[in-house]
Image (cartoon, rainbow, N blue to C red):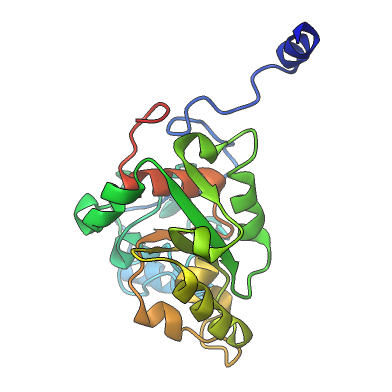
Length: 256
């Protein structure tokens, strides 16, 4: 026992103590900030450059549900666009993912848009089944990291499970390919009610680069209520964990 304790002491503190305030690398691209003085001409230039149509060509606003965080708009117009390293960018409503010029305050999950049963039932324990619906494995790897020794979302009662029958909801990654559409529906139907749906990553939220492709089937997304949108390409583990904590009503510190 003493030997094991010495080994732990040598390794140092491996877990992130406070997932709400953990700083990240300055190279990380999170919440964008857009100059309030952006012109229609500048907005149009950025919109033409954007690979997914995330930038409005009239206002210059950025839709984080479409954004790949490629940074091309900031490279073209550094005085207009910049990406902060703020990773708390999840939202409970699709329209809240749109960042407008001059909107420099942090994004928040709208408590009023969260279903009452979500906070009542899942605040202290939330089991999720992850479904890769044609994903490229980038968001899937980040979600896997959310449960590792560093981020350890399990300390808040948030865990991934192997079967939808053991889950309280599903987490979808990928644009939902035609071949995964029915499998996704089956997985959702097997999950006991009440259940939640979380979309993680640009592909899941909007289709991303694959939007409009005949190989993609968005019927499930369009016909079901989405409880949480977690943008990113891929989404950072801290973006996912903080978004889920905000959704279920968990505050700072450990379990509350």
